[in-house]
Image 1 (spheres, helix red, strand yellow):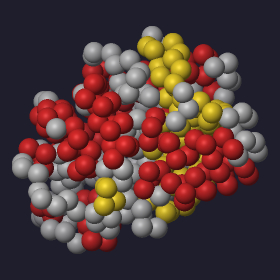
Image 2 (cartoon, helix red, strand yellow):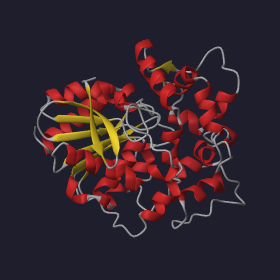
Image 3 (tube, helix red, strand yellow):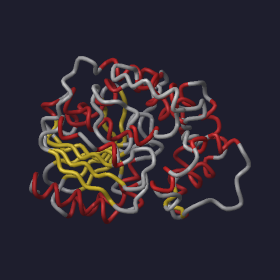
Length: 341
């Protein structure tokens, strides 16, 4: 990682890592991640001729973590990035985001179109308001034939999830008290050993599981004794694991979970916003991401006229750490064609 620097943005102090010169590319991490999650991409993108800017986002790492839940809505999260551009003297940048960072990246050209040159979504598709948040691929077989999902495009996404999933589904769990916050913080090292893995299950295998095993109850397992052997393979080596563990022992998981607790507020805020992404965009999906399935990329062209799409074979959710060379190659190729460095 490059050395950290601190900037003032939107009322908070942000930790930022920067390398290279050329067109600006801002890399946005997801949850529970850090700027460090982009460690494999920074040097290659800088060498390809880009100014690579990687912040710890609000509530993460060395960046400030305000106390209120509403301090983590999209107005604040996108405002932080506008403030980052201002602090660095930049008019525009290409925003690349993974997981929650992807959701923020897709919202930037909707709320701040004059500050966005292009968007790269990694795993996270663009989900406009007129599309269902719960893709049929996610809920197939989870509802009985006599009580199918009441598809209502106007419904709050959290309300949609409550129709389908058990209370242990991770997003619902985040909204129903602090049970998940405590379970994850009880043993931070175990949390990252458990969740940051690859080769755990393919998408095809996941879809063959019985409905009771497909309710995405990812964090309730942390309340039970740790099994003697975890499935799949660890993504983080010993030194990388220490970086995440030390950071989250200091901050806890609540600030990042508060991003989820604004899901309904964010949805309401965007109801009257034009859902057309009017900048060049690249979407990189992962074949075996069981939450952000590649099928959710279908139909994005209707809202993003200038869109290129790819799917990385054999890749799970933590794409830029699990398949770093493949992710970096796709990003670099697109950037060189659309924003020559």
